[in-house]
Length: 190
Image 1 (cartoon, rainbow, N blue to C red):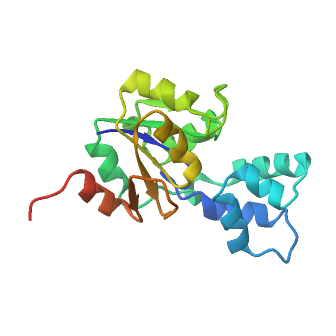
Image 2: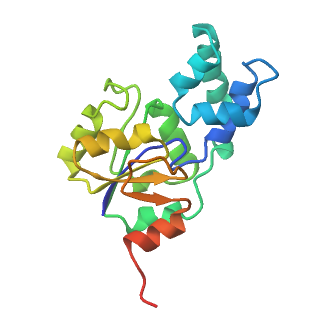
């Protein structure tokens, strides 16, 4: 299995940290669950919904960079899938330096063959350019993401798709944890 992974909310549980940081920048009456809901659509979407200025967006990025990687852990059961997969690649809007810092912190960089990061010059999802590049280079089978935005480009280029902790329409598979995905991809005999 050759897998393309989204990073935030798919490989690593970063949304609690994102939500806490954004909570400091929005009106006090806005609840964390409302912030999370909008962030799960996309960061850009959340900044528009909460009417954040460019200065506030830059402050968010600075504050998020200051959050320890320890507060952005990998999801439970993830390493089992990464070990079983033939190839793992990442496509994320997060800057390369941040991705590498988190991967190194959790000693997980060796699981990934390739990475397209937000500062590599590709258009943002749902544009399929970065997915097309990674698929051509690695002959991928499956794309896994936590948002519809993550699976749209995969669908466009003919990859199977999996939504993680999201039941929105459009994916080929849905999972809420990585133990279940491992069983789906590599069933064990009982």
